[in-house]
Length: 406
Image 1 (spheres, rainbow, N blue to C red):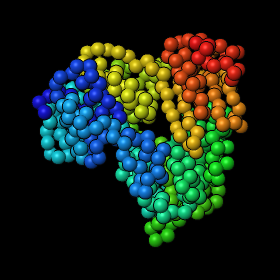
Image 2: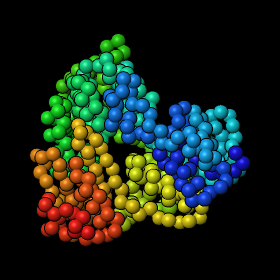
Image 3: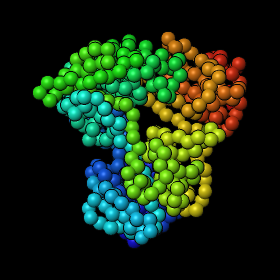
């Protein structure tokens, strides 16, 4: 490599940045550095399809080998970037190589947040972030009879759904008063609480874990702060993720719960771009304030923004964030991530098989949550993106297609 763009991170953000650069006509060298030995793969199936194959989730390639070869994108796997010297334009890798670059992109992602309680080191305690994590969890789950999931967020509930469907006894422990509390309204959270309980999942809200208990080095259960002990021969912790900022810190970049970037994905040194789970950026729908989003959509959007920035075309990030989750055959889709909501409009019934919750602030549609209602999701996403008024007094009628109101 004699200059060009060095991309640190081989997941969604890094791979799509390389693809976008080529699509926009960038002709110089591109090299992606990935710590994992596996070729770049999609991460959502790790939790959503945990138990669908005998050996664990099969990797779904982000791109084929032919894609990288035909576009002259170098992919260096099993290699960690240890340091980046912005002054000399050299980066050092774990393979004791010094590699020159013209521009560098950080797509370093995030790591699973670890339990900070006694017993966290016991065999049978798992986290889910990588393909290797998923394989180890799947292997252990085959012989397990009872699983405790610590954390009632998206990953934890998807794993609970998968394990329960495979015939395992599943308990979910959530420290707050509702499931997916950082992302959903109480209405939609209540819908999924009913879904999980009706499927046989034992849910504990406002549950604080005191310790994991074990015997001969193997986990045997989870003890709560009130003294309750829940038997388990498998524990999965889904308590969030921590942005990987070690390299950015070594480079002297500004950090604040992630790598701080502007709406063009530029770090505090504008010669550096940062994208994906590790990047903190101005919220596209709010005036003031920053956000960090862990989603494929965000990784893809930021990759396109960063590619334009590296080529001198400043295109701001303005897209409405959106997410999805699959649990017990119910598809949840969300858009907007609003901060202030003063009106909820519910279409459908929380006791039915589908539900739409439209979120308004000062009369303006700012978000929505949708269960098995893809048409409503698409309509609201379009309305938010275009700034179109969606009258709440008409949107409340489930017999009126939302697209007819655009």
